[in-house]
Image (cartoon, rainbow, N blue to C red; front, side, top):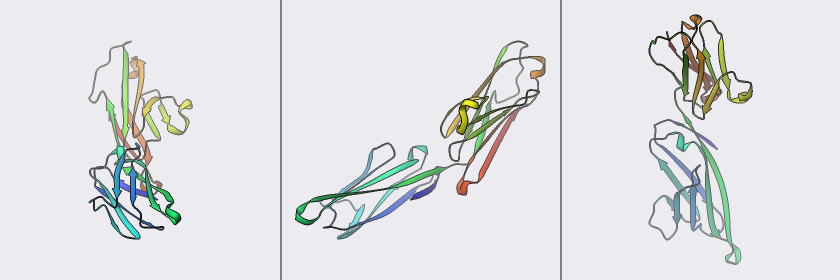
Length: 199
């Protein structure tokens, strides 16, 4: 099961357990492997309710990229002849954020002829960006794609936020607009893009 969550919002996940004698322990671990719910029948927690069939819930506030990933549910109870049984299941949370792009230097700047220059293009949001384009004046487009990083003409790093750097020696034909464009996936596999430019 996959759950879509907007970046910065609160979310709650409900799940049910049944079978064997009444479940006596439930744990949920987050994508980092940390336990975020640990319930036993002897505890006073109301995160799980019921007898033979249990209903449990977990809530997280202000979702960010750390909440993105697979959560594992582990339930234990006693079956025939007091044998302990364990069942596991999982769900996936996908965090969505509006696609943004930024570029450094962020304002008009003067270049010194033959001096080394670096343009940094950063893309953030949606599912991890899968393509970044840096449009250069008089020199075409430098491109990075997550699917084929070895064939990319732009050096980038990152996951949900991808930072790309392009270094060059300033020439007379270096004048013009530098445009950073990012493309990635949002809900229903739609492709979104964002761009920013320095003139």
